[in-house]
Image (cartoon, rainbow, N blue to C red; front, side, top):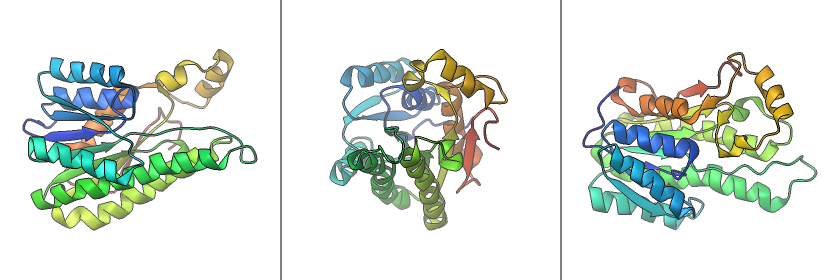
Length: 248
């Protein structure tokens, strides 16, 4: 994997799960990492501790990605303190499940605000320093349900599908300045969100996965690391599926 020494990364939703795994993977590869998080300061501090233990620097950035001013200020803080921004991982997301006829308007709006608008706000802010540098990589974390759909997750699936359209459009806009935009689409991953799934439901999930198991956050992080690296220098507008064969 390419060396990230001297590079600066910002990972949103970095306090736990896939976000934390991405932070630590980037740190182990040599990047300084800013940890964006919404509210769990203790969890974010643990991510920062692991970044430092990996031998590099960490910065904690508490902000709501759904707030465009806060998103811009977060990027500005990173560039002001560290002089550049090379990698943005748009990982922050929320899932509020519910059947169409029962889902509240505010639940739909929150998922669009965080999952779609948040990624848009951060990408817009990050694009400015990246275009000036004439290099950079943005990786959006989508989901397998953004491609397949899923009953009871219409709003979530719509938001994750929108991320794929955003990824491809930004890839076309920014490629001429050597700024790449890609996405990962994880399947069912062992995280806090899946830990409480009843065993019967888990077994049904496993039946849909040819690999016969759930993925790990580290496996998703390695895919993100590849897309962010110079090993993927000629890869943009791509969706890398990390789903054990659940969707091909």
